Picture 1 (cartoon, one colour):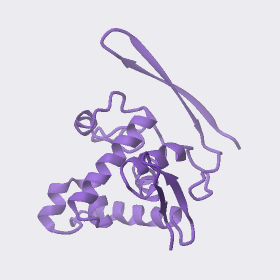
Picture 2 (cartoon, helix red, strand yellow):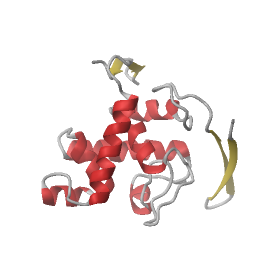
Picture 3 (spheres, helix red, strand yellow):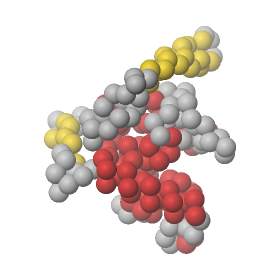
Length: 184
């Protein structure tokens, strides 16, 4: 059964109202792995390229965070596809946290920061994305919180699904350099 929802997000600006329309097609196939899900692959690939991250990791975090629901809001206040906390979104320059493009770009930027802090260690970076970098630094590993440990396991599972060996994702960056991901 095909499902399509149409949502309008209203964003108040200083001088006017702006409307952004978001279309979600749950039955469409995603190119990153051929699974039914929300169709944000072009944005994911562009955001991953901009922040030098494997797009499969961005997509795995997105699935673990919101299951591709751009209007998702957690009980703690995290919003959108990448579940950005309002303060984090503000610091990253996000004007509309429910805009898929803004949310994915900011989420990828924050994930890149976590990867940099933890020297490319994906497990620690993902744990920090979930629980905060201070907590991961305190324990020097994935914190002993069930929620965070389950989260890291889910992200790794999704990452293996989207980035299976032999799958090649390529793009040309702003400098004209070809980059390849998931080549194993």
